[in-house]
Length: 374
Ligand code: SF4
Image: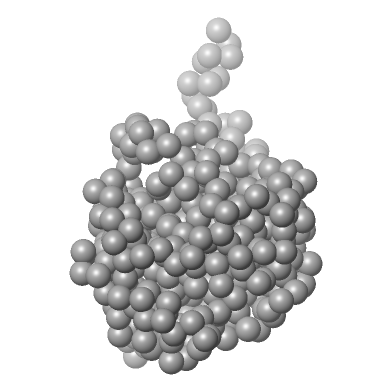
């Protein structure tokens, strides 16, 4: 009885003694909501956010997410492998490299009818973004195939969908041609940190990857670039990847976060699966340091339960890939995804054809700062 009386008088007395010192996630999320996004991140700052207590990181990332996006909207995308396998590169995670014996059947470039049919099907199933992937080092010397792909881009854009391509490294002229064809975004992942990168790929450099991103950006195409966790990298490498992305002159409009699906026959076949908390840490940190980007819960989603995916959405992921396969690896079941949308109260996101939105956001922010200081 005594205890009850005291509790009624001072119901939160026991909280006052707790130590509520702010985490880096709390401080930076608050700053982001107040001042907008920034590109001058120090690696140590991102590291501190990344290492904040995970529930605090999740909570503050969710706040940034709600500030910068409609938190109920999740974009459904479809990624189709239009040219499969036989790739000359040595990306250690990839079953499409010709260097590894994974039993994957190579397939030359799909014809127009088959690609357009797949795009129609994806649209009917609710996808608003159609991504085409070709297993190539680059598109140099592939004029016929490249021109064919330009046609596919035009047609699919004409269906009212966002169109993305991932065709390897690009030259400046090719980026411009893709822009003319109506390409919304070009995907070229950095995969991991600059330091860890040589452990994963030796056939092209980190700087070559960044060069492609620059051509894409300069052509006025949205940049889609992210990475993969679970490659054997350290947490410091995850921080390094996010630091590189968040300090590009303009943040990528799209940041896919993948969890490795270890494929037998690749050098990474024995990697242990990524834990959900690793994924949440990565998504939440990406959300705080690149608030306007679409953070895409990509490969590896198939291994996560619905409650686990819900935590990823809360942390700031606002896009998933639907469809039977994600390039060559299995993907989530269509009906299960529909049930998830219903249960979690998610709304399919409409297509967005604005380009270089990250740049516009930066301009708005600079203008707002200039007018408030004047
Ligand atoms: S990730 Fe792309 S470039 Fe690397 S081996 Fe696979 S298909 Fe080739």
